Image 1: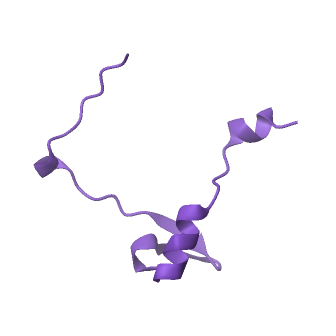
Image 2 (image 1 turned 135 degrees about the horizontal axis):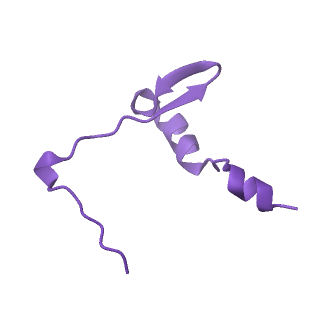
Length: 54
């Protein structure tokens, strides 16, 4: 088991997530409800997973 240190709530800050949509980079927080839902359902690419796939 590993020991993971976490910051107290008052020292944490929000991380703004940006993604590329239709050729533009935009913060996910500015998406409409439907686009946010679509973003949550996306499957993200990782090189390691792709390399292991036959």
